[in-house]
Image 1 (cartoon, helix red, strand yellow):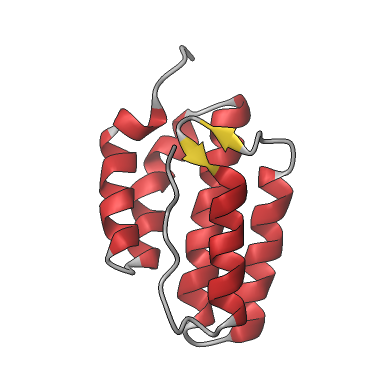
Image 2 (cartoon, rainbow, N blue to C red):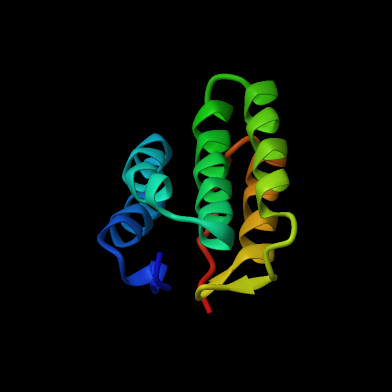
Length: 113
């Protein structure tokens, strides 16, 4: 697969809009068709973001389930640079971690470069 600018894909554009609205299950749904087609680090990044969104969605009903998905996301994001494909990956992970620790009292930002 050729290199693509993930943030310019319709799937990521929709996912970012949904993230900013706090619609985390829908983020997962928006990115999944693209994730299936990706390979390498782009696939790992997208899978990690899907799992971060799933963690936030699940945390609404189960703190344990939220943390479980968060831990899964970290495994996919391990090895992805702190800044990759226009996304501040390390900052995104910290945003989600803080939101989970604070029991979703505020929505996490999706930090871009």
